[in-house]
Image 1 (cartoon, rainbow, N blue to C red):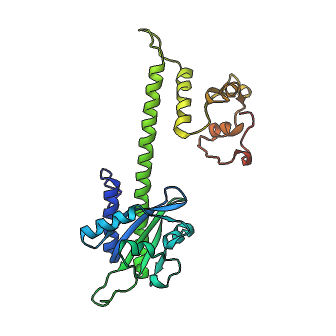
Image 2 (cartoon, rainbow, N blue to C red; image 1 turned 90 degrees about the horizontal axis):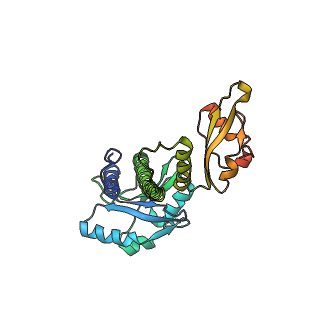
Image 3 (cartoon, one colour; image 1 turned 90 degrees about the vertical axis):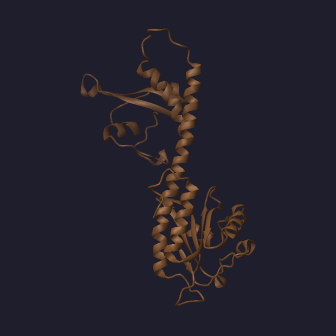
Length: 287
């Protein structure tokens, strides 16, 4: 499947190509990708079908303005539950919402819907509509368990592509913010006379900690260093630089080796993400 190797193509173009490949693999007539952008609804992001280009463009335009609440339709059911479904007869499926199908003039006989999941994140839903007729079933048939497993595997690759595209977009946004901050700092900093010594570590860190706050949308940041001391019992951890409302107080704090989250990180050499510090025994109230 294409997508992960072709990083230079626009995400929308690659997504359309992926949908065509899914349709070929499972012999579907049309496919949709709906993404959750606000946590409360699904927006139609892409749609492809085996139909004349003019008809497809018209149907895509009609879909683009529509949103589906998470308590609506088969897609909402899949997004909430996180499990894919195969619907052999859409007319007998209670959760099927046919008003959109009627609006775009595309009757749905049967479908598959699968969650697009990357790690713990549910990105959206892939729907594949109407199994195409073949020689043995000229009137059409439903999607098979093999079709479902094929679509599930291809949907997993599609989710990876979407996650990568989202991460790239966020990195570009953060890079733009960082560039703006660096320009602002450069404009605000008075010019140094020729031959002046380079800035010391504390000056550099005091410039970087506010940037860390801005890039992570956090209230504070700090840099701590371990001073081993002349003797083992004299070792201490000092906060060399900090940013935020408590920065002055933070730079006056010192910790014993291994004390607090900072001490744990220094001793273990590992990063850590803590969702609730009040429930983590490593957290020190000193900081």
